[in-house]
Length: 117
Image (cartoon, rainbow, N blue to C red; front, top):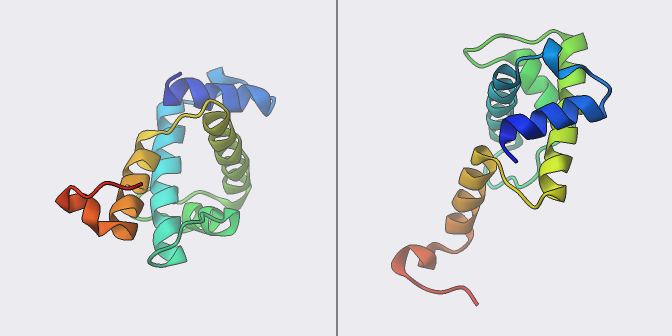
């Protein structure tokens, strides 16, 4: 399933009409907010809190600032989107990149060809 398919399923499971939302815009907004929230959490953070995600949505970062009422809805959409990905044992591109960074931070020897056992 694609990221857009997962976001549409997230909308459906929240009782929202996917025709009323542009999935590419939701994914872009989620990506930007996720990146900003992880920066706000600090170096080495492995947890994305709903609080930091919502704060990042409301603060913006060179992109559209999201009002409070919409930010709360996007927090729920993001949570459901991540849940759908997890149940499918899938990753979106952002998480694939993030997990790669964490792997290299935690195990720098991988860069030299060392195997993890």
